[in-house]
Length: 126
Image (cartoon, rainbow, N blue to C red; front, side):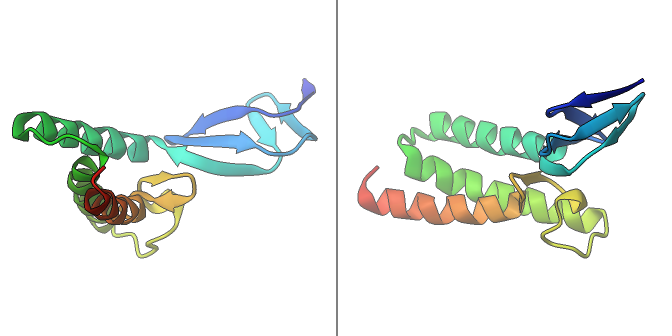
C-alpha cells in the first residue's frame, strides 16, 4: 500500500534517518524520500560514556563548574571517536557513517570543541 507521509523517523543499522521532504512515500518497508543523518547510536553512546565519566571524575575530584567538566569530557570524546574510526579502518574522518556522529559532526570534533570551550570557561571562572 502506497501512502504519503509528511515526515518520518526510521532507524536502520543504528542510524537515525529523518525525512526532510513532504512528498515522501512508503511502500511496505521501503521508504522513498530525502533522508539525512541526525546522529547515530554509537555517537550517543560515546557522548553518554564521556560525560558520565566526566561527572564521575568531577564528583570524586571535587570539580565544579562547566569548564573543568568539559576539559575532562573533551579528550575522552576525542580518543573514543578517533579510536572507533581507526578500529573500523575508516579513512573518512568526517563521514557520519564511518563512526560516531552528532548533528553531522564526528564525535571527535565535538570533543575538540568542548575541550576548547572548557579552557575558555575555566579561564573566565565558570
